[in-house]
Picture 1 (cartoon, rainbow, N blue to C red):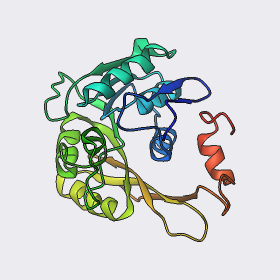
Picture 2: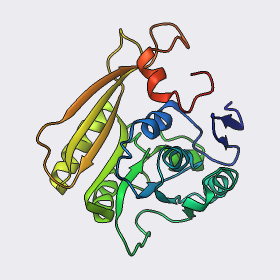
Picture 3: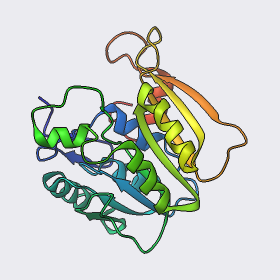
Length: 236
């Protein structure tokens, strides 16, 4: 059973009400997303508010966080109110499909419900947070493009197989892959996740990277993983 709270260097995530707990995927995405020149962010499916808080720590951006699950939305509100950046983060209890904004954003970011082909959990809240029952990858791409500025970026993390499909979906929607980081659990295992950045214009070339989380033993973290996440994890 996951802890009811997770303490980072500059904020704490309470997660007893949220179906989607703090995990490596969210921390990787929040630490990797390029916030250079980013003044406005839309966090889709904020869950505990983790990504919004990480981006707020790394930038001066104004952030709108949307969440369809009522309990998770309440949890995000608590976490953000207890943080140093509550004035820059607005939480809305809405789905992406129902979200209406009078402006576009420099960044759309999401750790989305991507387990399309796995068994649906019995718990309804966890089903909504981990599966695409309420937001399909195609909808995520379509609506994200709608809310992106012409020079904006869409930042996502997906399992490798679903990530390859997503790259094609984005291409069909006019979003080009600009950055790709492959995430390997250990040196001997293949990549399990893709960190991806898309933009609404072609890339001259795709900046590709690879990172290994653990050297081989449990909790023996690689230097590159420590460097990426050093501003967040207490032990790094």
